[in-house]
Image (cartoon, rainbow, N blue to C red; front, top):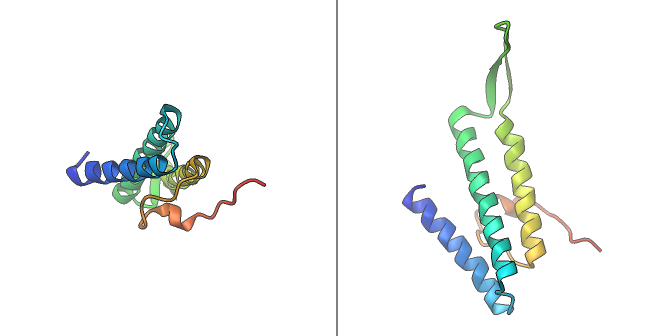
Length: 112
């Protein structure tokens, strides 16, 4: 992981932990949930890198040599991971730590 990514993930973790501290919820349980959120962030970054490298569409070839283009599986996986990240923040009762994050595009309402 590059220095910039390490710094960003460190900043994200610190932002989330600061929010926990300010609400008095900086217990091992909540800290573990923050770390689970960061695992999702790393996963989403891997999908983002794959999409950047291989593109939105990828060429698929079957055992008979037939080829076709299909949507890169990382596209759907990235979207799903982003939804999980938003849900994790809601569970934690925290705000999005990054203004430029994909999560700003997701609107999930809390259960009533």
